[in-house]
Length: 123
Image 1 (cartoon, rainbow, N blue to C red):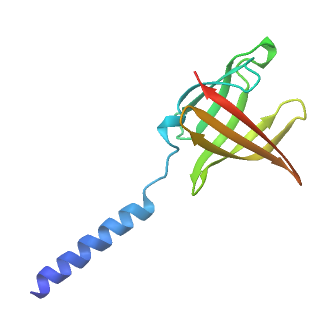
Image 2 (image 1 turned 135 degrees about the horizontal axis):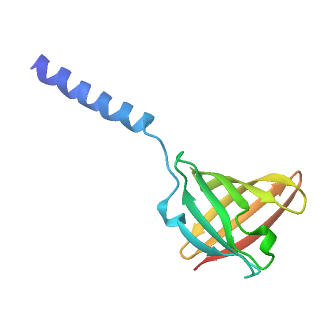
């Protein structure tokens, strides 16, 4: 009886430890092409070879912005995702929250006391 109890406790601990230390990945539903709110750009979100989820402008009205990294370091949290958003004109990276709602991605970027929310649509 003691051996079975030890095995069961060991199995449970093993599962708990595996769950705790398994790397967390952004939801694969984020992967793909997203039409920005102004519908002038397409951002492609994918997981890079180093395991980080990123979004790059793959089609832009302003050709100088093509292939610019727009969203970086996407990570899941309790309410969706956190990420860094490239404020290209300001030359800064802003903290952001991303929330997936079906075929829409709601992005709220913050800078100090100010925030801006935009909605992208899955292409």
